[in-house]
Image (cartoon, rainbow, N blue to C red):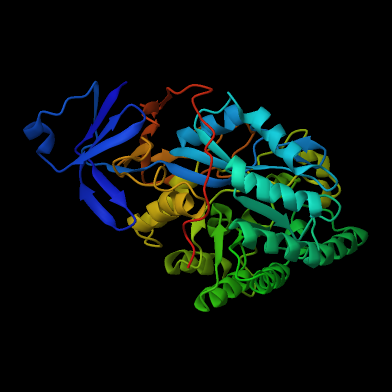
Length: 474
């Protein structure tokens, strides 16, 4: 087994930063050494990586991706091979993707299909959440089985997309009660899809067909309402763990903050697009170009009545938002996003961001929005704790997996389709963004998968991670 020694760097954890040399033996972190101890103890390694002047952090964990997801008559353009390779370029060493049960389908079969897609194809480690698109006696039994036997301990429900994923309040309550019995986490897409569908049809009837209307027909108030309703249902079910995915709206964040102030087991994530992008610079672009940024919940307007961006950053600082994920679900502009020309409701929903999450959030550190420690906490450690992978993942400590990123704060990253871009998509959602820092080296379970601006990993290196229950409850 290869022994790799990372010397001269500053190890960053949620609780602080310290100078340590890090020894990885095989696939596992073997030891941390204070400055001078390596030489004094005669520690040897097959390979030494000089991290002088750089940060040494746990590998990033993106707990919300959709590789190869069927949507709107097409499929997300990143395969598990291309998507996990791009993730490695961005300092991510573990993803948690979503296995799918559509309405009328079988949960166990849905998970099996995702295992077939991913097995032998991933460049980094991977795990699964399970989408439950039809709550009935069989799916409730499957939730218990997956939690107890398959290492799938979180289940996503939808308050949107009637006829595809939608669950009504009664179905949601039943699934939450089951989750309470088995200790699982319910993840919620919280938008009032029934009301949204009315607004969409009314807009189309008025001839409002451009991409920008995707945002105005999914108003933030309907995200706030659905989030509040989900929180009430979770309380009725017995304070079960509830995790609101891709939170974008101030009203939704206020509901989460209120619940957390009452010591409820309510948690939430946001995504980079809700921290940085506005309708005016994306969805409102002319000639249908705005379709590139159609995702749900939508990007919000800079002229909304609520300061959504500022509130999202505040939520990250206060821990009312615990995690930043991507909701990575890329579709090419040509032949995929173009399916919605003349009808914004037919534009496949999703953006490509898995490669850039660590970079974009680090720019928040540079801008003074969050601390360096909070960057590591929201992108690495809390994802591992929230979804039952800690302390094997999310921390640099003896016994943890050898998932390590060397980050150069003095480097620079230019994001763009002709610049840094390795996702299987024909455009960049982050064209022109400049980052004051750079991914230097990425190690996945002891294997160097990216260094010197070169991918050195391989398809099939990634292993499936069987997860335990959440370790993040109040």
